[in-house]
Amino acid sequence: MDDGPDVPNIDAWDAKLHGTDGPDNNEISINYVLSGIQSKRKNVDIDDIFAYKVALEPMDLNEDHEPTSIYECTQRSDWIKWKEVINMELNSLKKRGVFGPIIRTPYDVKPVGYKWVFVRKINEHGEVVKYKAWLVAQGFSQR
Image 1 (cartoon, rainbow, N blue to C red):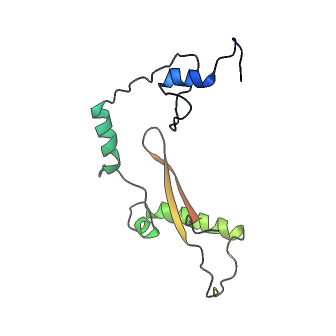
Image 2: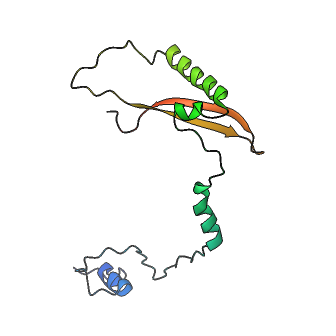
Image 3: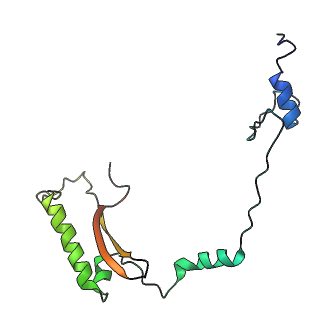
């Protein structure tokens, strides 16, 4: 098949740009630039001190972390605030009719688990301005 003088042969372009002998190459090229101009990615310099501090940040033992269970909430000095938001969440779920009557589950049915999520909203001065609690279905157990 003759493409004519003005139509370039794509296989020839591919061989010229990527150093292949022809269309028999089984590798997939990530950079398909038919103009012949390829741009290089800029090298990223990583500041070792910054990276070290970011890596240590989750391990900061002095930081007051969010509780992960109701038991942890009861052991904290701000238990009264957590108790208020837990009761607000339970009342909200009851008001919306989330919980039905308690029944015995059939043998072949596995009930969905749950977990509590606790969050404190902190302002720009580092002061706690709001406590929040959610009762959520445990992930990946729903169908």
